[in-house]
Length: 162
Image (tube, rainbow, N blue to C red; front, side):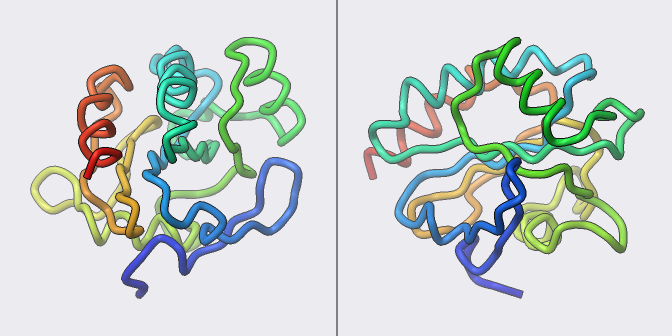
């Protein structure tokens, strides 16, 4: 496995292969998102973080996932339309991915190994699990789905100042 997030690629919401190296030097918040989840309103908080910190070298990276209660049933165009019209999302969105299992995006295998969940779990339990990555591409912290974006702002601020 890699030492940093920059070793990974993923297809963006428009189907283009993107290297996470494109975000080298930025603080990142990597989030598995869904349009029909009890936590979907966190899109608003994620977008607020993007607006608050984006100019200082921060980005949210959204990875739609349909592995939890079929809460992201749409295709890329439907997901993009939902995010744009409902939450005016400006941060980068990617194609729908799997975060657990044999077909999980390699990035997520790495994130889970770098920051295991409760009791060392190497799985994602639900939508809106968040991973904070520092400017050097290393995972700093994992946040539970119920942790709101607003509660992460102080941690982001600290990383941007260091």
